[in-house]
Image 1 (cartoon, rainbow, N blue to C red):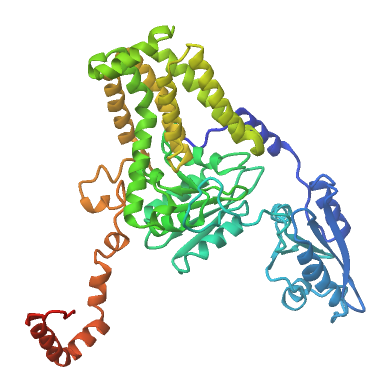
Image 2 (cartoon, rainbow, N blue to C red; image 1 turned 60 degrees about the vertical axis):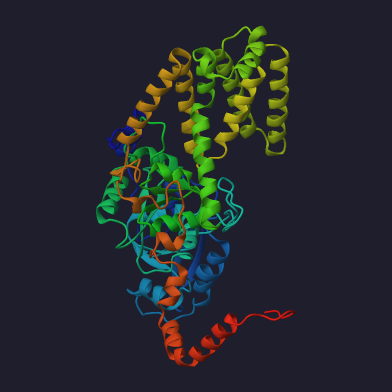
Length: 546
């Protein structure tokens, strides 16, 4: 994959950035430094500058610079400006300004929890644009960056795209720091590693990469790190921008990188050796590498009993098969293979098609197109009326086309069942892939019947077998010959069997406490056991009960 390609717009923006003259940056003159900051940010009205004086007899001018919409007002007022004003009468050197004034502020005056000295002009501007506060001091060509990021952010809420009946209800938000903390709450291990980087030439988006040391492969971690560093984009506004840049193969309907809105899913994949990539500004994090079976697993599978999880997974796989082949199998039956339909049902189908002017292939295309329009309209409509419009529109449209003699009733049933089956798949992007491939099978069934469907399945499996996700075969562990690799694929075996391979009863019997109790009381229990055995051998009299 060539990640160094750029569009014309990106090249023009890069050329214009390179040809423009940069400001001189910080100066020993405080007024000039403030003027340069204002000019760099276009004299933005939300840029706030608070001037203070530090020292007693010979006060030194300083200024706290921040953006009002990105910085936390409480932190700026109390811990930055407030601490400077409270210590304005501190010790002062006989010189015009003490040479260690920044060190004095860092060690004795500032009450903020996180602060650092920064001399690079671009880093200072980026810190202010990220919500931090920069303290500029008269006579110094440096700034003290105080961590005051805040502003209005969305609170942690339940995931809206991956809803479960049983399990955690919290979901990721748009703040990368909050998302990292949600994962750390679940994995309290020193092996959890976190790396930050900034991607996007103009947006300078914070991207976090998390993995478990000694669990995730070193080659995989290095490969992900290199692919992220090779990205050349002007803007990075969502994790989807990142997904297209780092995936192995672009031209495929199947997703090769998993995304989730749930912290428990991300934590579980980290413990399995995968890597989580968090992009600032979106609640959807990327999990890589990904395999085909991963898109049919739900977080609820591990919160419910294993037998319930097995049933739900079988339903999902069957739903995916119905999504792919439902309309095409009907077209093949009614167009080329009448002999395979029972006589009674065939008579019923022929009677329905007597007044319909279109063949089954055209019927399916019309109904599939109408259903996709209704689905998209329901998503884009306001939430208060979107569901009502979808349901009412589907009912009215379905009954109207049947009464008008354009579509047969059984075709409406087939298309409706196919649409419902698409909603049973936990991963939305996998459901979209099935909807796209479904139209290809419709065309093959309309041209060649079951022969075309068979050829399509062969090509589909061959394509899926050629896919890789960061070097991992997309169809693994199906391609593996080991039965142990298939413990969590279509079937979800009990947790104890996927882990140590011992049942809870066997684990209890092997504990030292169990062995000590049973071995220490064997002599005491023997007479009681023998007495009970003799009692069971004696015949019971009439009216006696156990």
